[in-house]
Length: 210
Image 1 (cartoon, helix red, strand yellow):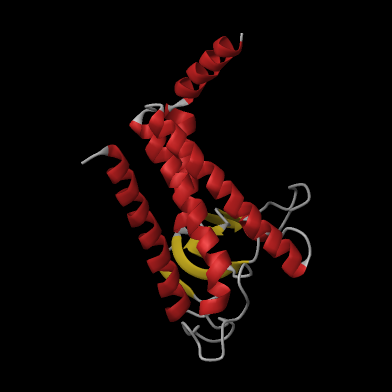
Image 2: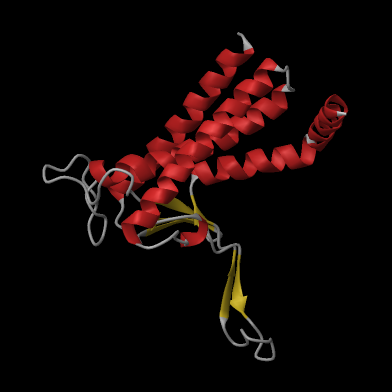
């Protein structure tokens, strides 16, 4: 099987897995509902209205629309770069790492673009897919579905600890999804194993410009 066919199949698998999990969460759990798999791993249904960790860009719908459009442009740029890397015979690991990042970005874009139109609201009820009265929002204004929660360490800061003394702490607190993990894994692979590739490329470009 040719490399580009492997990359395409890899992308289809990643995107399908991400969306199957998200759709299952939306159609089987209410917002805020939690399933304990282990003490340190839970399925917790939350929705992200903007960027990572629940941050938002700008005000209301305009900010959300700008963020969604920016994500689309960013994904287009990553896709173009993957094609460039393929044509210049980049190592397979680099191509698969960028494909992970590419699929992670697309997975969350799908939520932002379409989930508002195809799902009903998840507050205090399980969402319906393709509800007869329409979805909870409009095109470009959907919310990203998150569900992976790893409270590995829980405790209380000692009273003498600055600022947070006596308060509860949880590590790892963020709730994320498979698409987020694709991006994280792809970036880590590039940093850990392919720094030399980018350093060599930088040197070659500098020589070409000299």
